[in-house]
Image (tube, rainbow, N blue to C red; front, side, top):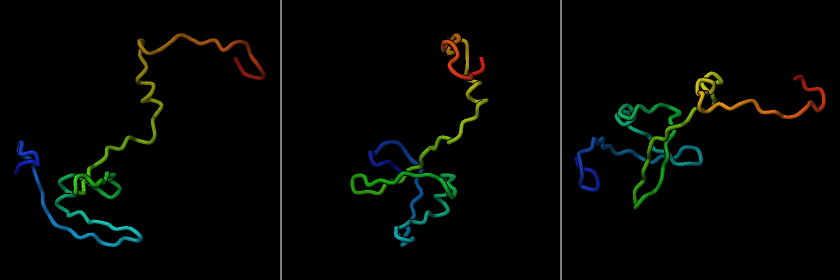
Amino acid sequence: MFDDAGGKDIQCIYMTTTVQKWGNSLAVRLPRAVVDDRSLREGSVVSVRSENGRIVMREVTVRPTSVKLSDLLAKISVKNSHAEVSWGSRNGKELW
């Protein structure tokens, strides 16, 4: 199989599916072969756009929403650490 530009071989799974009503929206069910090939699961994030008369859907890499303090601390090195910063004398009931 060739890509649209007539270039190198690409792997292709071709199946037909039907657009169906889902609540107030329309939905397309993904065939099991496509889901398995792309390792998709419920909750996978995809982008959908209209491009040159085609509907294009791609997987989106989602960054984790939470960051662990230990992961941030592991990134500290001699090159990116700085000296203490003086914030001046106490102003109120701070403990120094």
